[in-house]
Length: 189
Image (cartoon, rainbow, N blue to C red; front, side, top):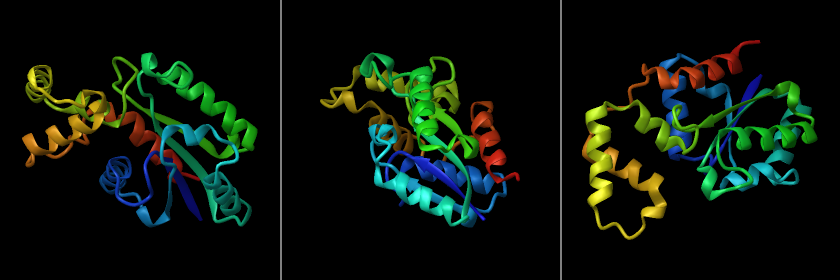
């Protein structure tokens, strides 16, 4: 029996599923039991007629999938009045899950900075790196001449990877504990 992880981006290699795969490996959970569903942009999660939901429901009907974990970004509330921020993201997604009849099989994890409860995967990662590294990145962003600062999350990710190529994610950081717990629960009967 497989479990489904629904995330932003595509189901091939993205930042979202790369971190999930690292966590699965760290937790000794069998990645082969996971069917990844890349939903593209966050807005697709809120479309009950989205093709990925049809594929997911087919897997459930065929009894090849028995649990679902939704992982999506909180984003910033000021940028998205409908789905922005942790609470709005969860509330609106719970409505979709109920409408699709998936509530009994589903759990939700919203990626964000645990302190501000907004942001995205990169905000979660940035919240787990050493303060010295975080301050360096933030200072660089403040004084840089980047023309596309609105694409903040991809800039953060690229800066972190280039500035600290030998410093992997600290998966033991407590800011990853809630996601680890959701992943453990996904594999428990």
